[in-house]
Image (tube, rainbow, N blue to C red; front, side, top):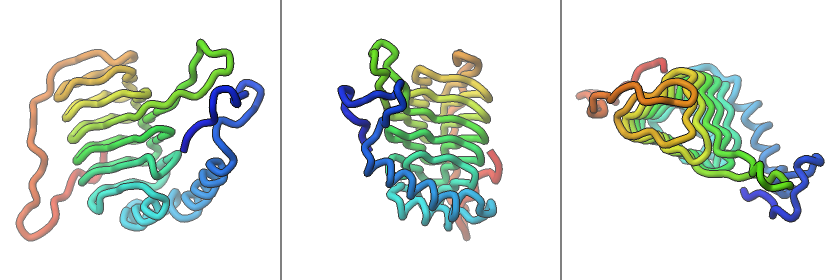
Length: 203
């Protein structure tokens, strides 16, 4: 999904940012998610995964995407092994969002890939991808801006705001996010004998 050329944009006058076909596909997705995904009981992870897959998302079978999440466009979403997107999280993925293995995006967190060029009189959309690397944690109601990489094992504390990359195995908090300390590097959980591994039930 690509925004219209800058010369054709009139967002300040109420004009569209995306072509009609893209807007219709987004409308179909929002209707289907509202009817088939958003309201579903918490344990229905497999069902929600099927809905997302049908619209082009790449979701590992072990990942958990809860209902009440807001996903702008499924083809721009990749979720790794045992990763979690918690209720009320917002994935404004005008550009791709990738959630790595064992990474967690907690309740109410906002991953925002889009912004506007404030120096252009047409105020065009500008989008850059977000990467939440393996074993990273975006805590409750935190905000991650366009183009940010949350490094492997990094933590963005609750209601923290990240507009710059976070180094691997560090803990940041505040607005703007500031380095608090390093985090001890830990290995991802291994599959226990006799059954699949089970990440924490809550984030």
